[in-house]
Length: 326
Image (tube, rainbow, N blue to C red; front, top):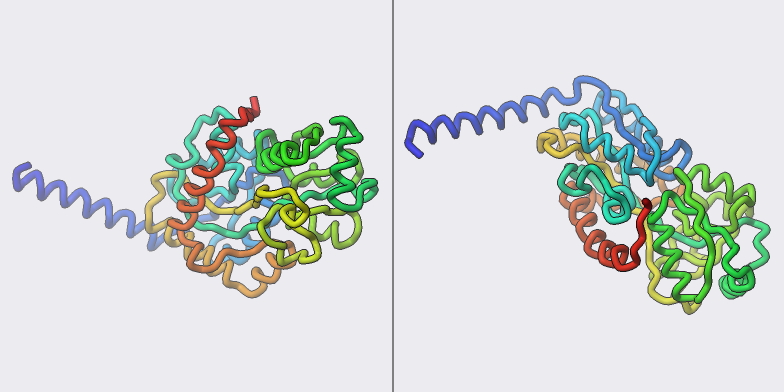
């Protein structure tokens, strides 16, 4: 490359950098749409709604929530993958949308390459939660009831091949039981059917069901964590009850389309960190059983690392199981 071309190349790079910097200085100039790829009233929607007003204050622009449901969250997530990379369309998702769907569905986008990680948000474990009139009152009775039912019991799951399905398949193998999986478009309709007794149980996000377990409208048998959950310390782990090694949780994060300027991603991240540091937000998350990640784990790099670790953990297991949603 001659001196003249080198100078031109440097000038172009400098211009691009200045353009990105200018975007960050003025961003946001209008409202931001956060796609929630699940129905209103579900756990992902609840987290987004807790954050929306504080985010508005941090960014100086409205944050509009749009529920785009279906296909285990892949329809709404796909819309963001194809959106303009300008910071005005983002998505809140979790380990199903950005890890599991990639191997259980034939997606039109790449869960890693088509997104810019913005921030980790919060985490809650899965637990086994059942209708209140379930005859079983502990895990041993539950396993016996499943075996007596000869595969007729029903377990609700969001989509097909989600974390609840995978945990359920491991549980069947470990306990030599069988039951039917009933797919739902989101956590809210699943919860409604469980409360109404239309399905028997689910491997669900503990935060979603905590208020109903506390009020006696549902019952729980065990939590899928190595140690007891801080929000319900009286609920034993599966390990304690002799069903070893089934650990599953839901962690939520926020992504932007690939190519969103780094300075814009950073501005979004700073606003999210400010939101998660707000005392009222912390209390609301605690009330619904969500544990906010420490500040040091809220950076884009931490979300990327979390996603990578979960891909390395779950993709081989899911591929070996042959789970597909089609």
